[in-house]
Structures are given as structure tokens and as C-alpha cells.
Image 1 (cartoon, one colour):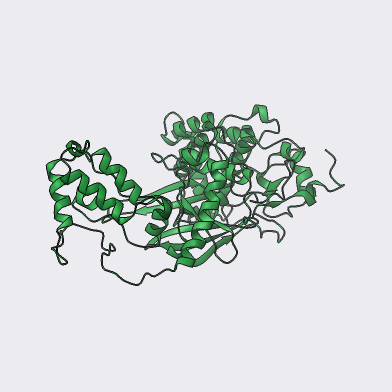
Image 2: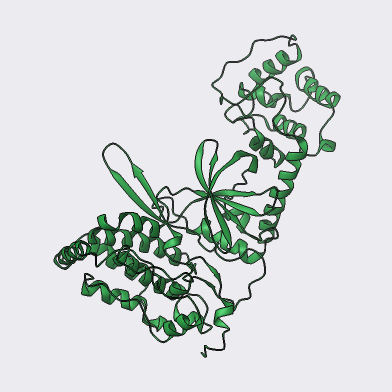
Length: 474
């Protein structure tokens, strides 16, 4: 019926694969053609009702159509236009063989009977997983309508290799229909809870398609073996910020540092404007995408793991602390909740990392003793090439009093001004000269820094064993 109104086969613009089968099972149908009579639409919708018991019989359909065409007194006959009547008559009198309508179709749209490359059992299992996920979203009221979360079948994914592993997740490089993506498997996520999905919301609410300083989440799937949920993310080919600094520190001028920090702070500003807190903001969660063409090379800096660093199950209590010790603000160790100000403290540490190419406190054990020293005011040593204004802003960001730290908007505005090299150009030009001299003397950069301590841990983890230590009194 739909094909007669459109003159093209249904779903001719889509691949006829498992994804389409899932969409049809979830209620997707061809778009109703404009000006189709309402009585015709009503019958068509009854025919493709998802409940077989609600569909009319072939005899009932035939009787209705015959009434439309042959009954002069039938009250709805005037609603059927002449072209549609002609199409219906052609359908009723069609020979067994007829000419196909030639239309431009998707290369994987197949209209000849063939053996499908998935079974009904596989389809039902995927439907059960996805429907359970969306049912959970529906229970959270508005989230399922405000968030355009796409379920992606695991069968479409080809895992290439493991990129990284943290305390609460594993990151893989993968292919979906030939496109490179990153996939985060969230450990212990077989049973989702409200807190975890609240964090998933932050990914979608904070992503800004115009500026893309937040990593994009394409959709969700589930590992068929472990039953853990997986998030399909944009793949950043430059790795994380720390690895990027390690490889390129010599070429990253002061002007470049300011540009990087401007972009990162712009992303953090977006998160805070949406009234979210990252809570695990460090160089390992800032990703670099390198875009190259014939004329130029552009680097983009994307904030990732937005709220997904915490466990997905219920093992955490509100008072639990998780993260990377050097990037956690001192008040958090005293029992204060994570806040926008605690994110700004992390921004100060990222600023320091840009000046050195090294992670903060890499040469000491990340234990209760270091936590005590951070609470007592210990911060990394500032490098000789750091301009005074930059050092002052960094100190404000890691001020022990959260109320004295600047806002993300304020930090972003300063970096924007500095990166445009206005009145501050002279001091940053001088800083660049000093930086080059220190590099020449091997007194600055990742190679200069002493060997990292084996117990300096830069993956997010539960810190209750450290913060509960009797050696620390708050």
C-alpha cells in the first residue's frame, strides 16, 4: 500500500541489515506520503501494526478496497483521488510478472529473497538488551526524549585493538561500517543504575556540535559475552593530551600552549554552563584529534570521559572519592563534594603539565602522605620560563580555598586574550626564548624529568584505602 503511494520500494535508502531489522522491530515504518487520504493511512497502519493479532485479514483488506472502488454510495470514496484509484486497480489486476520501477537505492538495499546474515535468536537477544536499556531511560522521565541515544548492534563492530585500560573501563579502537571509532567498555555495568545514566545524560547535554570541544558519543551497545555496556565514541587519532605532550613537547611553543589551554577551557566552560561537573578532569581525559589536508594541519582538543569514570554499579557511596590523586582538589579529601571549583583546580594542574610536559607529582608515591601534603599546600614547582601572569593564574586555579578560584568562563576569557597575543605578546615571546634555551640545556621537558615512581598512578581509582588512613587527620 505504501509503495503505491510513493512509487518506490520501502526503505530503499537504507542498508537492509540487522540495524534496519532492529529499527523495524522498534516501530520504524516508511514515512507517510503527503496528501495520502486518511482512510487509506488508517488501513495501511493497521496492516503494519507490530501486533499480528491487530492486523486485518487479507479478505478484510480486499473488502475495504473493493468498497472504495466499486461502491458508488460508499462515503469515503470521494477521499480517494483518481491516481490512487488507478494504482489500486492496477494492483488488483497485476500479472504475476511486472516491470520493476527503477529508483536510486542504497547499495545494500536488497529486494530479492535471500538468506539473512543474522538469526531471529540474535535479533531477539539484541532487542532484549536495547529495550531494557531504553525502558530504563523511560523510567527516568524526560531523558529518553531529550537524548537522542542510538543503539548500535554489537555485530556491526569490529574490535581492532585495546588503546587503554583504567579502573572503571577499557578503551578499544574499532571499526563500524568502515569508520574508525573508539569504544569504551564500562566495567561492572551489567546492571545500570540511575546515577550512571545521569552521567550518560551529561555526555549528550554538554556536546556542542558547533565547537566540538567535548568528545562525541555516537551510541550505545552491549558486549554479548560479558553483558557490559559499551559507549561508541569519536576516535581521536592524536591520543590523550599527555601522550601528545610527550611526543611533541619541543615543538609546542608558548603561543601553542595558550591556544591549547583556550580550547580546553572553552570545553570546560561548556560543561559548567550546562551545570555539570566533570569530576575526573586530567590530561588522560583530554583527547587530541589531528586533522590534516593538503594546505594545513589542525589539532582539536576534546574533553572525554565526561562523568563516565565512575563505576556504573552501586559500589560507590556519595562520600567515596575516586580519581587521580594529583588532580583532586584538597577540599575533596576533607569530605567536600566535587564541584565546578574542584574542576578548576584540575585546570591548574593541566596548565602546569603544559609548561613541563610531565604529569604532576610523577616522582613520588601517590599515597596518604602525598594527600596530606596536598592538603597542607604542596603544589608542583613552577618552571623558570613561566610568565608571571600565567603563574599567577595557575596559582589561583589551585588555591586551597575553592571560593578564591576563578570560574571556567573567566579562565577561558583570559586564555582567549593571551592566545590572540595582544598586550601580553612581549612577555610570552620572552618566555619562548627562555623555554628554547632551557630545552637546549636539557633542563626542561619530559626527558629532563626524573624517573616516575612505580606507585605514581594516573588511572582513576577508588581512594578510600588512602583517605581512610589513620595517618591523615582532617
